[in-house]
Length: 51
Image (cartoon, helix red, strand yellow):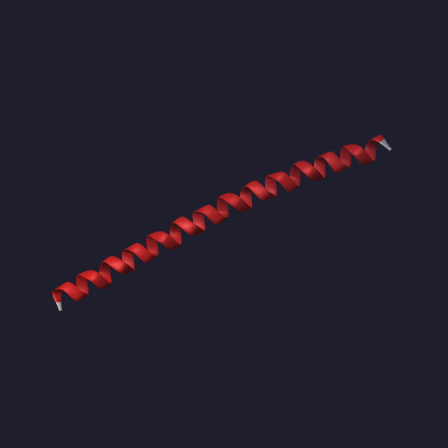
């Protein structure tokens, strides 16, 4: 019985670690997409101004 509880604790820790890693990945992807949008927005504005 004790072994099952230890295993459950390990799984809970792994789940929390996975959730944290997923959160970091989501934040990184969000920042990357914002950077891409800002970059292309700047390019389009520059192109529109020079045209």
